[in-house]
Amino acid sequence: MFQNNLLQNKHILITGGGTGLGKATAQRFLELGAQVHICGRRQDVLTATEHELRQRTNGQPNGKIHSHPCDVRDATAVDEMISKIWSKAPLDILMNNAAGNVLARTEDLSLGAFQSVIGIVLMGTLHTTMACGRRWLAEKRKAVVLNITTTYTTTGSAYVVPSAVAKAGVQALTRSLAVEWGDRGIRMNAIAPGPIRTEGAFSRLLPRPELEDAAKKRIPLGRFGTMEEFANLAAFLVSDGSAYINGEVVTMDGGEWLQGAGEFTSLGRELTQKEWEMMKPKRVKDSSKT
Ligand code: HXC
Ligand code: NAP
Image (cartoon, rainbow, N blue to C red; front, side):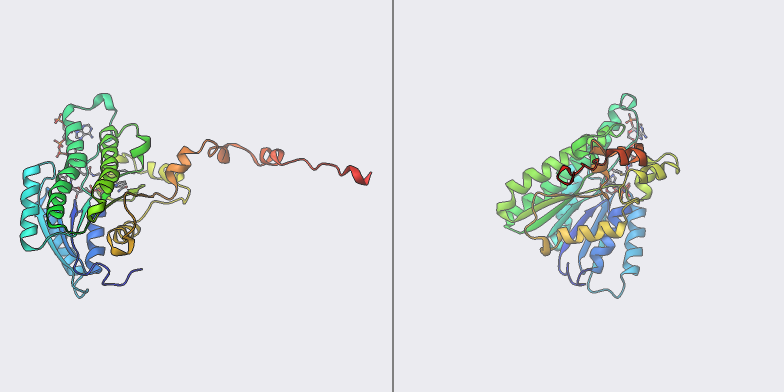
């Protein structure tokens, strides 16, 4: 899909890059020649991913991977990580992908649950964005930020309220800074994915495997997205090929949220063939021939 030097010489940090969509994207960026940094809370997971991706992309152009244990909720720890990365070479691209989520009735959630999810998703994104942004602005350096949100940022969603609140904040941050920092060479966009099978998301948000079929029925294309599709979109949005896209939230959900939003969508299942026939216009008799 892309020339394999698309991200050559680009230094990129992917938060939550040790698993799921972050890991798949790290692999794609490496294949495209980038220097990739990943971070997460679990050192063992990061080390395993670093080794696996190094082996998988062995022989590929020039990509290199480095991992950093870091909890993005901790602003000081984030600044230390960014300092360490900068001391080798400044970042060109930041992908805010780390997230936390819980499926629960909101009245059952403790304050700690809200703080945990909002801390990771909203404050974590803010910490990395500020740590990189201040350096980019001071150095007059061009850069790109890609935030990963969800399709329920605008609609909200029952049963994932801390995530909905936090991701809506990330969307507002994306659009605000795209304007405020755009004139100084910093682009900021987001991807809003629909369901893509990852252990992290599906184990927490789909309590029974049978619910997968019901979930697919909500998607016009009849399937979940894939990690490869996600990683390719991310590669395009961070590359110079998308240099004029700024402040955009790209939905990648097979049409799912629009299907849920359309007033008449459910009639497709509810009306019978006979009823559709009855809805067709009746032939009007041509009176000039009588
Ligand atoms: C209610 C819960 C809970 C649950 C945890 N808590 N799980 N409350 N229902 N299922 C509460 C705990 O009791 C605790 O409250 C507080 O939340 C923090 O939990 P801990 O386990 O102590 O903390 P922590 O290790 O920080 O865990 C964070 C987490 C966890 C967010 C709760 O799920 C996590 O580590 N997630 C990371 C990965 C992830 O979520 N990936 C999925 C992303 S999918 P107290 O009161 O004791 O402090 C996504 C979009 C999907 O974002 C969209 C699909 C279409
Ligand atoms: P995932 O595998 O659970 O990824 C989340 C990552 O975030 C993990 O690697 C986790 O690593 C890291 N993380 C969590 N808390 C952190 C913290 N405090 N500091 C640093 N890292 C932290 O889930 P995923 O499905 O790939 O999700 C990736 C992104 O896509 C998320 O932003 C999610 O909201 C979004 N998304 C996913 C879907 C989907 O269907 N998969 C749909 C819509 C949006 P540690 O636990 O080791 O810290």
